[in-house]
Length: 377
Ligand code: TXA
Ligand code: MG
Image (tube, protein in one colour):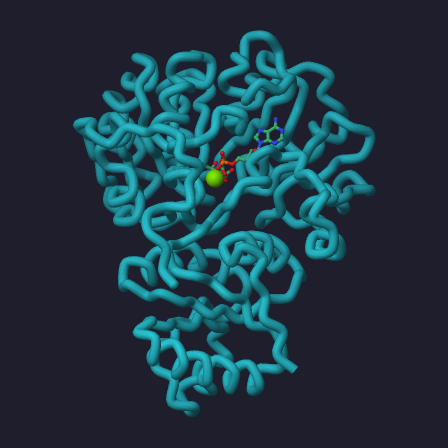
């Protein structure tokens, strides 16, 4: 059954602002840097004036404000309806910010930053006093990342301050990755929105905590455990996201505060259907008929390779997430939001292997399904 409203946490939020919107054409190349820079200046000034501006990154759209300005950071929580114990990530454009924002930065942390930045990776380090507790959600540590999206890096450079930015969704909802989705979700809630096409990865950065003895992945993303191990040797998953443990033990508490909340949820009920493809298709077909008798609209998200199998079995509301895990990651949130807009009540999704970026896909998908997995034998 479709739920009313969002599964947010009821934190107050604003939605009556005059939002200035800048759409940078997707066709605009990096060579057009000067033009992009000129058009971004007034938006960077908004950041310096303590206002909120959404900007594109290579992972998902970010809802930015000056991360060193307590009052500005507070506006982010208000715009998202986000609980204030959930820390923000600082976005920087150059390495010399690290020593200003953090201390006790290990050689391993440096090696990983040098290897994967700019790119979809966040490091958690000990924070210096210059970073307000409002930004770090009351923690003594701070997440920092250097995005590779060219518009993001020009924007941060113009603002000349670390920009705190969570994903630009209302708390609990899937993260917007397209201009249309971010504008429809956030217009009226922020002072400015800058768009530049679709985000190339489509899921949020990998978060690695370097404040303990062994680098620990708090949130999986496009930079995988295998890629990290090649640079620093031993790397572990935080217990709360370990694929072998996550479904068995409800008492495990996530170390990234954001990972404990209901998340990535569309209004529709999402169910992951796991098992041999043909058996899953049969199960889904039966359920779709049952659902339609109850007046519930059903959609299916599948791998491209299985698409024709559904068609052959007279199922028509089928949405391919892509030909490989990279495409699936890029399309996942976009598809969940689109299916919501189309008014589906139930979404059945195939599952994905935990290999490579599949680990991050399953992490997001399981949360959007509220861990509702139907095993079909
Ligand atoms: O790709 C990304 O990281 C995107 C784009 C906009 O850069 N940002 C993003 O931010 O995903 P957000 O706020 O939606 O998710 C940040 C996650 C939350 O789960 C938060 O709890 C965790 O990072 N986090 C941030 N700082 C942390 C810290 N010091 N210790 C542990 N977890 C932290
Ligand atoms: Mg988020």
